[in-house]
Amino acid sequence: MTTLTDALQALAKHCQQTTSFSALTFHRGVEREALRVTRADGRISHLPHPKSLGSPLTHSSITTDYSESLMEFITQVHPSVEGVIKELEDIHNLVNHELYKQDECLWPASMPCYLSGNEDVPIAYYGESNTGKLKRVYREGLSNRYGRIMQCIAGMHYNFSFDKDFWLFLENYKEKTDLTPAQKQAFQSESYFALIRNFRRSSWMLSLLFGASPAIDESFLASKPNHLGELNKNTWFGEKATSLRMSDLGYQNKAQADLYVCYNEVDTYIKTIKKALQTPYETYQNIGVKVDGEYRQLNTNLLQIENEYYSDIRPKRVTQPGEHPSAALQSRGVEYIEVRIMDLNPSSSIGMQSSTLYFIDVFLLYCMLRGDEHLDMKECSQLRKMQQEIAEHGRDLEMNFDFGQGTSKTERQSRQHAE
Image 1 (cartoon, rainbow, N blue to C red):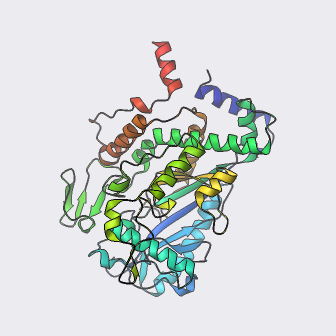
Image 2: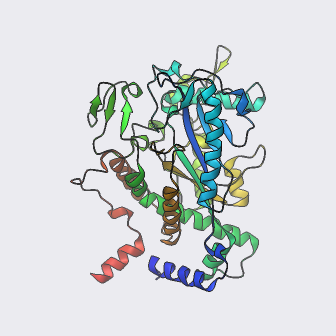
Image 3: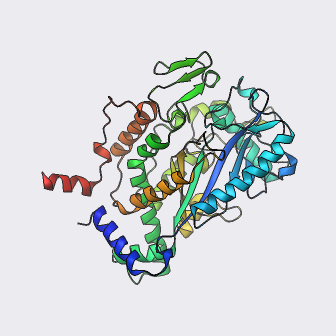
């Protein structure tokens, strides 16, 4: 029985024997979201996306997310944290220069500014092409399903993958030598899914260490939850909270609360996602698809498209034109993973610090080497409960959290053997 210690020792030995520094080269890129607000009063902007920044439909680095006022910055893939940070700084410098001309700036926090209601949030416009119209109708669906205010939450997504030298190490360590190209693809997908399972077991740590959304503007909710206090007359906060963004107050989705997405294999993951895409939901049926000549949503199923499923981490593969994400995974396997749990760092002008990205790198390496035990429905339910408790009460030193089900099988066996 191998342990995490065994894997780390083998990796250390591999690095010592490898003259190329690329033995531990990772590939990463960042997606950062941010609301445009007026400099005078910090209210959400109602101006269109600046023309000087290009088309949000086609620009590779500067686009919009749900709202016309919710910008998204996308870096290229870099072999170093410094490369990511430098490109993101360059993007911010350009954007801030243009926003200054129209008396706007970027809201620094993950939870949005004061919003007077759904109509205060303009839905993103992508033109009159078929693709642009499709993106618009999808967002109309999100508006009718969850409300526009929730869609204004911003975060940082971290796209991460291992390089070929690491995969050679892992193949040798796990005695998976002489693999065919198809077998290599399957091995890498299986390994990434093991990483995802271990990430879900330990992702509470990222909320605890880097959660930066313990407060919300009173306009975000219709009434104050009992577990939140009043910071002032306009702000509610959780005194011991870490990330209300990742709590049930943030990405609220009652329809998906009982959706069990299996991360044990690529096939089962795709199967459960496709089931949600094909399962009608009564509440959404009551909304209708096309009413009085206007589209309200793409369909009445539990998910309109695959990306509507809210998750703190996703397996990813770059898609070809017209290709669905699940089809790309099915045919070519997992290419990288997308970490979606991270709040924006409001003390940073770009929403994040290099030290945080370095920590995520090490954390994901740990998740890859920790083990490959499967997740069952019971453990998934317990992990969700724990994640919510950490998000709302994680800084309460007097509170007990149940991490028992999140301990890996090998670690439990080792502990029992020692006892």
